[in-house]
Image 1 (tube, helix red, strand yellow):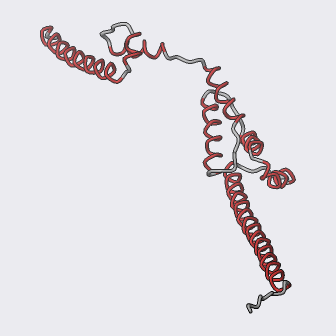
Image 2: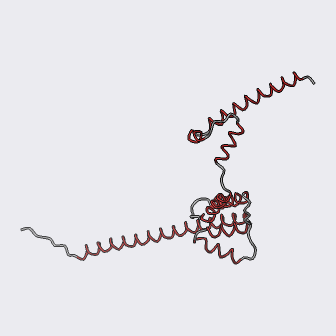
Image 3: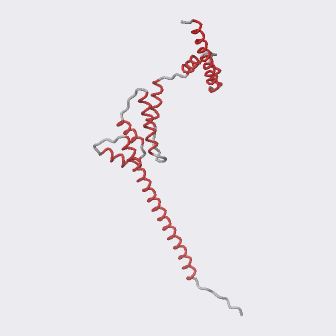
Length: 196
């Protein structure tokens, strides 16, 4: 084997690596905020620099699990917004917990969803609890969307009823006032003064 040839190819590869390393460091240093860069020691190797950054921002798995669980348990649907997106957000949190090796079954997720629904969904919750079969996440989404539409329709009908009864009472009151004024006006005799 030609030793001179091996050294030449290694030098060429080293120059390519050196250029790639320099470019990587420039890109990383340019994209990291100055406050973080000030705390980092100078490093000439991109791989070591990246591992130093990773060491600074390593988080505890237990802390992540605790944070995600507290978000999941404290979530409440306020009755406004898209209920499908709300359920998907909760499902996403469960998926993140599963990625951290904390297994939560879909049954638990369905029950957490029901717990987080407001009081206006109470008949819906009772209906689910009286059924023998359990719902999957997709069935829950479909049923919740349907129930939300029913509640919205019921709200529109009750608002229409309230506004029409309010208009009726106002009209009746107005008619009474007009009639009362008219009655008072006719009951008083007109007095004419004669001029002599």
